[in-house]
Amino acid sequence: MRTDVALQPDKNDPNNEEKRLDPSRRGFLKWAAGGIGVLALAPGLARTAVLRERYLLFHNPNTGESVRQVYWTPRDGYIREAVNTISWALRDHHNDQVRQFDSNVLDQLYALQLQLGLGQPVNVISGYRSPSTNWMLCEGSRRVARRSYHMQAMALDIRVPGGRVSDLYRAARSLGAGGVGYYPRSNFVHIDSGPVRYWS
Image (cartoon, rainbow, N blue to C red; front, side, top):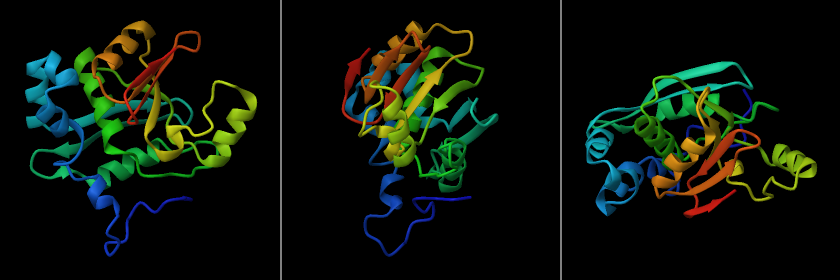
């Protein structure tokens, strides 16, 4: 397995990933404190999101891999090994480079699964992109951002098999978190944990 960013951070580095995985600073607990997004829309989901373990259920059609993984519990917060497993499944399938995923975008995907009541895997058609892959895709399409959040492991392109992409887009927008791009011709929605913004 090749990595461009180590999945096990240096514990002596004050800027290591321990901070990024701190549940008191990120994700649903932050949304709950602010009373925004999906938590404001659905109090029952808010309680579930904060008090129950969180898991992701997704399929990567590029690699054929499926993941069902608990990645956060009320007792332990974000589980590093689980986030590592999820990050590997969301690797750049062109070259097997991997980077640890931002917990906020994982929480956005979890919120969508809750809100839509999905019992089937979401298809993640694009997760992490290495700079070389992103450059290659930019050369082939003007719709690919040169400074894509995919390169920071902060973005996912998703679709629900058999579902309407318009429903997925509305649900993603209702979270009030990060960027949401609508691509109906390509049948996917982009979500990221950058600033709140929408485009189609």
